[in-house]
Amino acid sequence: MNKRTIEIESNSLKEAREQIKSKIPKGFDVIREEILSDGKTKNIESTGETVEAAFEKAKSKLPSNSEIIEKKRKRTPQKKVVTVEAFDEWIARSRVNIDSDVRIESILMKGKGRKGVFGIGKKPNKYEIHLFEQAVVEIKYKKMAKILIEFGEPPECAICGKKRPYKEMSGFGEEEKKIWFCSDTCWEKRGRIVGSKDGKGCPYYRKDMMCKSPSGILLPCSFTFKVGSNYTFCYVYRTFKVI
Image (cartoon, rainbow, N blue to C red; front, top):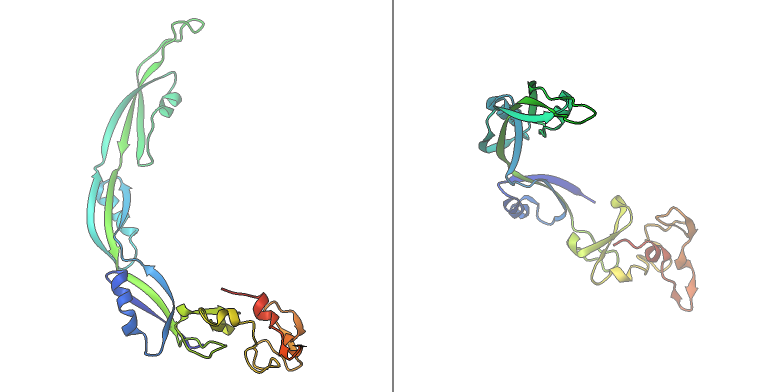
């Protein structure tokens, strides 16, 4: 089968698909479509010690050939101080819920507690925790929509011989040796021999009247056996149904 592929790029998938007919040579039909880029606006968020550093980090994540639509500053870098009570510094640290873009710079004891006697009168220390929140930025970007189209000559039905678009056909067998049938009229008839009455012309038929089916099993061709005046149905097409 003569197959070819092309890539079509446009502002949107709709526009790219509208170009398919003009890009494919006359007499050829689309086999499959693969979306390489959907052309939709996307966001990338990044953090940094400064707003400038955060934007540079975000830019480094942008896909190639993308267009920046908008740059947004979601948070400027800032320092914060929170006060917690705990019996030691490690417990104090664990009581501060921070995100990955926030770090603890220092912890200072601002008030010493009491040990108490047998637990009575026990009082925690007071800690001042200094935090640094990194800058958070967002970049909206867009890539051109791109689709890959595989096309080829319309397949020929192995029973009626008509050439029809791939979407109207059902295939059987390995990809490069696939046999095609009209989905609506011939698919259910595929059990009948394709070729002469004794099996010749069938892609699995051998000169010794044997059949090597897709499973690799070698068996006598079922069309060498008559039932009355008629030949039997081909077990290959019946057994190895592919929709």
